[in-house]
Image (cartoon, rainbow, N blue to C red):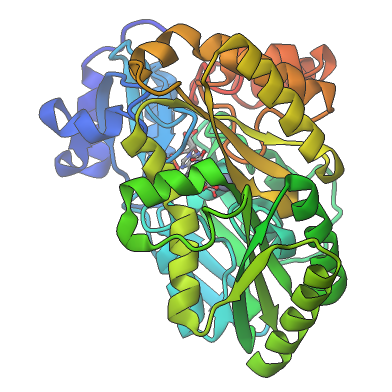
Length: 474
Ligand code: FAD
Ligand code: 2HG
Ligand code: ZN
């Protein structure tokens, strides 16, 4: 795209009001990603307050051939929501669009605008007597628009699915600035291609999500959490099978954490009192939701853990006594990402592998990396119930982590992703492609799949106005 004429900033101010177009020093937090891995330069940030304003902003930018980068909470982990270095892109912040449009109790749906913060959405659903189950560490600041644009996963996918499965309808501003009102609350609708599913997970490259209709669920009568020590990933997988059998649809979360990951939490946040981590290689967090009662849930849980103990599958276990304790255990799990930041620069891999092959994958990847980089440290944790592991790498101790990452990230990731491909896995399970994984995609996705993706992009955004250079190269 050519350098935009400065008049576009005035045009945008005329649409959204001068106070909602930011320039100069106000841009800093919109220009840098959460991990500090990408810093760009924006022409301005525009903050529309209505769908009509979004449509007019997109029309104005399309006419001026200025590209737009949609942004929600800017918590994404693949640098997809920040502008490039050109200084010519407009950041389209959806945060002002945060209205609750409707709750339909009989249809069990809620309709909110894209900038609604995830935690606020959980609270609103709760106050209305329902559960909105999407849950992830950044829920205090990520937006539902961003969750849908990345098809976020989180910690309850094993029972409720990804953001995609929670979405029944969307309102989208197209790359031409037209409004597609697809805010359906229908659970069945086979009237042609599924446009909703095309936009979910498209990372701001096909359209701007302005509102969504989402599924609500009954609140469970009880939730229980257990923290379990196991000696190996094989045992964690066996325990997962037992959890499915014993807890059936009650199983809502199954997370693993390796000893080094928990050691980092213990080192940087000792007040969190991580249990059992020193005695075993892995710990597992299991959550059960029960429609009957806490006593019923506890009974099922105890039966399962006793059976697992008898069969030598688990080494030790704690069942949280109350919600407070359960919350503390989950807080330890959610603190691993932050403990990694405290420890220093790191390399993240958000991979998925068929569950049965995960132990073999980890052994193979660990061996290949240890052979290439002596002393490299493995921070492995994640959503084993979904076959999704955060296979993260910390530099060997005692060396400059930033320099290590700058010099070796590409080779480290190549080793991990080649191993992922050997096991027919995915190099991005839930975080997306954004910019950080862009150059890796062609080696791990078929040429046919990439050509189909490019045809869709060209059809929906022929001038490449929306988030160019993300997911697909510009
Ligand atoms: P942003 O970061 O602002 O944007 C993400 C992408 O979506 C960008 O490509 C952007 O252009 C696009 N986008 C944003 N809003 C819109 C819109 N309205 N229309 C079109 N495109 C849009 N992710 C998981 O999946 N599971 C986890 O468990 C998880 N845990 C996390 C824990 C922490 C501590 C952190 C920091 C992040 C975590 N994430 C996780 C990643 C991140 O929170 C999610 O990707 C989240 O869904 C992003 O939402 P956001 O509003 O911050 O989007
Ligand atoms: C999580 O599951 C997030 O906590 C973040 O997806 C993963 O920090 C990471 O690598
Ligand atoms: Zn995750």
